[in-house]
Every structure is written in structure tokens, then in C-alpha cells.
Length: 352
Image (tube, rainbow, N blue to C red; front, side, top):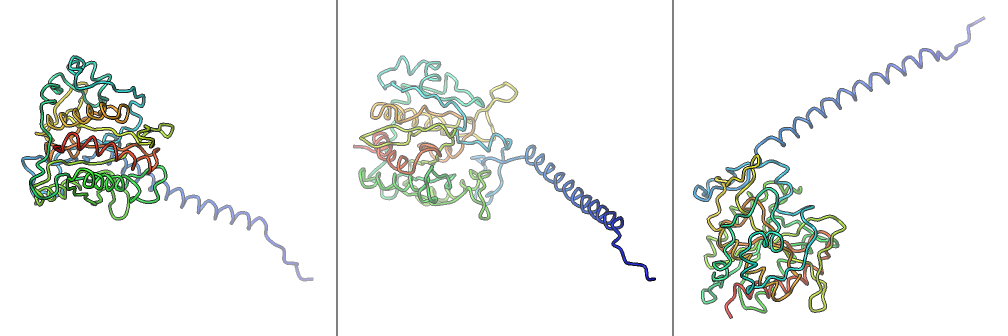
């Protein structure tokens, strides 16, 4: 009698087990090398030179892409947004007549400025009488644009932005329209994109990619006197900076300065490779803008933010970084803010 064929369950489970072990080993080896690569990449990024800026006295067209100062990834990733910085804001009630308060550095640090922990304001930095005597008016007789607006971080959007045209770039375009229509000053609004590389978001290196283009624009347009780098801040999701002005909800605005000075192992040091010969004028401009804003629209501006590096503030004396609201504001709130902001700018830089 022929032997009946039977299924060899023992061999099946043995082969199944061995096949499972084989694929487990393949996956384990893949993950090992993948993770090792990622760890090496992270360590390389963490410790490698992340370059930031040009030396003014050595910059030339031929040096595009050659950057001379390094800061670490953690520092650069949050610049110049003030993520989780001092959120509590008190109403600023300092006016140009309060010279006693304006000459008190300790008072200013608590009531007029937010000073990032990476740097510090010194007594010689703030000169109220000198700042108030500075003339920031542009020459309206000369032909050509007087103000340049651009965006180192052009992709920054608001809570309900559908695309970048309804982000910080759109706010900059509306500011241009208001300044030209209401105050008769010609404005160049640059649409360069510096926080996207190969179609992907890339904030790191945006300031380096921006600088050659902005320098070229300034060379080609010698009539430009005022340079505005407009951003949108980044804050906690439960924070909403808004002020009602003339019946409209306006995103609050913040003026921003960099000192080219950073704490290194507890010692405050100048960043010699990134000098800003216009630092005094930069501080004077934000000082006057803040006081003008306070007089016209108390509570509309946040405290002036002081950080360590120079950002885009070193190419013209009348340079300012402006943060318009944050990612928690709506696009409409940002546009509404351009109306009082344009008036404040006009009062400081446009002759009557």
C-alpha cells in the first residue's frame, strides 16, 4: 500500500522561522547603518561651522558663498525669531520728554528693550540725546527709490495664509503701497527668496544667500537710504499679539537690533569677524521709531528686541529688522498693522 503524503509541519515552521530570522537580520543591519549615518550627520551639523555673514572690509562679488564667521546650529535655528523669549508685555508709556527714564539703562532694559540672554546692552550703547538729535529723513528731491523692503525669510506665513503672497511678503507689498500712495515716497519691494534651497525650506544660510543680492540692489539704486528686512515672529501657540487701532485688529509690531556682541563662557565679547559700522545709527533708528510709535499708538509695538548678531543691519545706516506679528496672527491682522506702521515710518524718515 502506497504511503500517504502528509504535510511536513515541522519543516514548514522551521523554514518560516529561519526566513523570519534572515529578514530580521537584514532590517537590523539596515537600521544600524542608517542610524549611524544619521548620528554622524547630526554630530557633524552640531559641531561644524555654520557660517554667518561677510566681513565688510573684505566682501566682494567674487566672495559670494565665502562666509567668515561660525555660530552653532542651535543659535542660528532660532534667529531672528524670538521663540519662547519674554512673552509678557507691559504697555510702554515712555515718551521723548522722559529723558530721566531714557537715560536710565536699568529702566530701559526692563521697560523699553528685551535683551536676549546671548548678549547685553552696555551703558555706552544707548545715547538718548544723541539718538533724538539724529536726522533720519530721506532726500525726497533725488529721483529713485528711497526705501528697500525685502524678506530674508520670505516664506513666513500667518495663521490663515493660503500661500506666501498672504504671508510676510504680502504684508511688505501692502506697506510699499501705503508708503507710496499716502506719503509719496518711492519704495522698492524685493521679491528674492532666500529660505528655500532646491525647492525645500532652508532657513539656515538665508542671511548669507540674501547679502549679495541686497548689496547689488543698493549699488544699482544709490538713492535707497532706508533698508527694511521684514519678518514674522515665532511664538507659543497660545500667544496672540494684537492691538485694536481705529477699529481694526492689528498684529503688534516689534523692532529688532543686533549688537555683534555675544557671551562666550560668561564673558561678553565683540564678534570681531562681523562688525557693523552702523550699529549706532541702527540703535538710534529703532529708538526713534519706538518712541514715535508709543506716542501715536501706545501698545502697538512690542519692546525693541536686542540680539547678539548683526543680521541684515550692516549695509546701510538706516537699517531695521521689523517683526510683524507672529504665526498666531491672521493675515488680515498683519495687513491692518501696515497702516499704523507706515505712519510711524513716515513720521521718522519722511520730511513733511
